[in-house]
Every structure is written in structure tokens, then in C-alpha cells.
Image 1: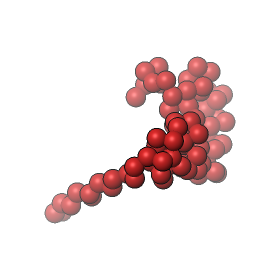
Image 2: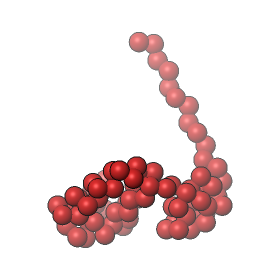
Image 3: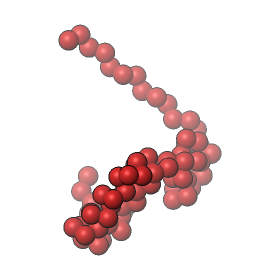
Image 4: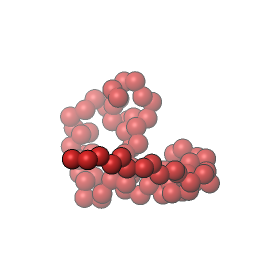
Amino acid sequence: MYPETVSKKFFVNVPLMMQWMMGVMRMVLPAQTVEKMKWMSYGSELYKDLGKGVAKVYGGEGPDLESGMTPKYDA
């Protein structure tokens, strides 16, 4: 998705040591784009931005996420 088509982009469960990338991106990307991006190392804090309706794994009170099946194929 192009940054100009979204109002906010969340990067969830980003390792702490990768936070330096955000600092580099701030220098290269336009300020309007950087304002739309939020990097967080702990997914359990996503509810602070999106409300309590998110799944429990993200700190909310919403329903659990359903896990998909991994497709199997013959090589």
C-alpha cells in the first residue's frame, strides 16, 4: 500500500534493535509519511491506539485471532 492511501500504518512486534531503522527513515521520508507510521516492539500495546476491540493478543478485549492453516504441497 502506498503511504498516501492510508491514514495510519502500524508495524507491530518490531525487534527493539530494529528501531534504528525508524530513525533512518525519518531522515529520508517526507514528514507527512513518517507521521502516519507507528513502530511498536510490543504488540500487546496496540489497543492503546486502536481501542479495546482488538484481539486479546494485542491487549484488547476482542475475540481471539483465528489461525490459518499452512498450505501443504508436494515438491
